Picture 1 (cartoon, rainbow, N blue to C red):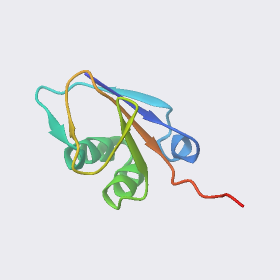
Picture 2: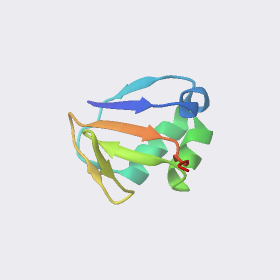
Picture 3: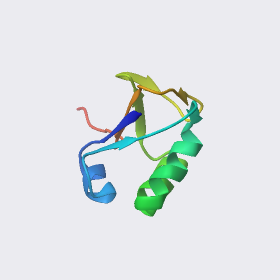
Length: 83
């Protein structure tokens, strides 16, 4: 099982803060976005279009990262700011 967390404005888009997804084998980020799309099509599109920052096990990741059973995946909206 993997834990998927949605932060900030993505919580409203996904309509949840956290999800738990059973996987039998390691999966790609594209496969995870397909799974998420089943319950939240808009969130799946955002992931596929690379409009989010991705963290796997609290380390920054990208769309090529492979997700394993037991991993925690977090999606964060892009940040901007500074002075």
